[in-house]
Length: 427
Image 1 (cartoon, rainbow, N blue to C red):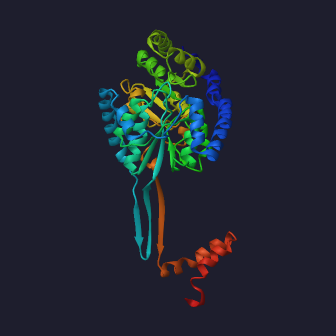
Image 2: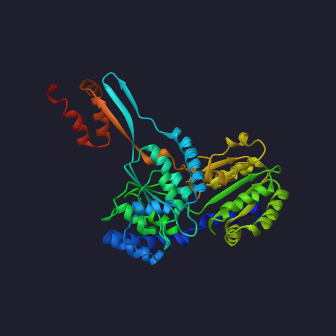
Image 3: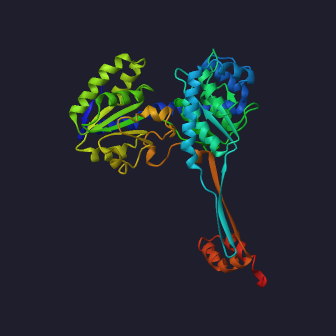
């Protein structure tokens, strides 16, 4: 059940959230760093070694072959394939609106502009352990495809029985035919630095465990990454009109991810908070991951009693959650006050799992308070921009003295000379 805090006592919960990964992440950085060094030295051999060590699988081929892909795809439940195809259509419809513009500004001998171009090669990490996430394939691959990425590769840890059919099916829906049968820091390192079998990529995206997150942090700069993903988070703002049954279900939907996941309720109604706790106690008995949910809610869950809903939104903006549900009357009227959230779910019938799987907005979202300054994954995540500038001789002559003076003010005389050289001797 959720511990109920008065606002003045909520500092205890904030500290828990702030520190929940600190010690473990430092250890993960050390372990991931060692694995990355080994992969850089020994390439494919190191990838095979660590896959055997951590996943118990001997790899002959690092990649799935075409016949293997087709065979495993046929094992996937066809009704699930149809559902994933519908979800992919929704994701595509949402993300097509995100295409950035290239543009040109032309005036009197000056031409400038911006070009937006796709990354060439992207690797997409997809967890494949006790819980596999074909939805992650769709959320990463569909916007990448819209952006124009030419080569997409799935990185996913193997099991002795093989890669999960639903992951293969999701990849096939998105037109991906390259699946690397490796996960963990070793897969991240192979994609970042390249091996004999694995080409060096431009960007690595997708969630993973703490070692994957640590490896992505360490390779950033060699390649781009989407974000350092932390444990999942949900924050629900609810008034007395909200349905406690729905709120309890939604809080537990995120708590089941991980014992480090955070599920927080902000409300101005103690009665509602107590009703939500009663619903959690009732519903949890029927959930397969009840043990994880209980540990998550006890460790990093909580309910903060607020003076009113406006105060609750202020607190939510400080926390900057990954997922924010507004279960309040006049939810659209309150949306404008929300400044920091990865994704916002409005009303009683827009639960967070709707966004995870189906609606179309991306579910790869900033965590750990990073929604204060970062955004969900999208089409622009798979593109880069470059500028171009053209000045005629006459226009550069007009600007020459200004540029020379500016360069000299910074004591960069070679910069100034680059301009002077073009107009010496009266040319």
